[in-house]
Image (cartoon, rainbow, N blue to C red):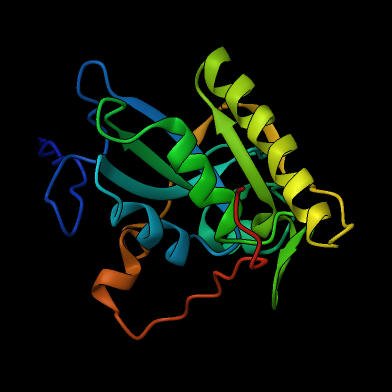
Length: 192
């Protein structure tokens, strides 16, 4: 008879924090901004962000692999799970970074990355997050229009249904591969 050894929880490559643990009174929110490598780096660098992890949300299959997600048939979004301390960094600050650091008007793509997995999305974990995300969407749409950008924001803002961790080699990818690909690019429009 063989026994299976318990596996250790996945740890953040930089902070060595457990990727599954959420400290009391902290919050989590999930952002889709195209390729998740650059988006994750954006958030792990912010003071008040406790932990980040990359994975898949919004799809129709259970426990998808990266290869499956890249086919476009699972309808998952590449997302960053952001666990944050709201006494240090506000949800508004995170949302401002989200809106400003990618192009939320591109539909099922970000730059050269094309496919449903690269869509702009916010998956919320509370009604307050949902309301704040929608308010900032309206504010950013107005900021775009003020700068003469008349494209409509296509960001999906819905409550989180499921999150599946991406494979380990994707976690904190740009910390492990500093010269790796990062397609993250905003519109150049900031909040007023």
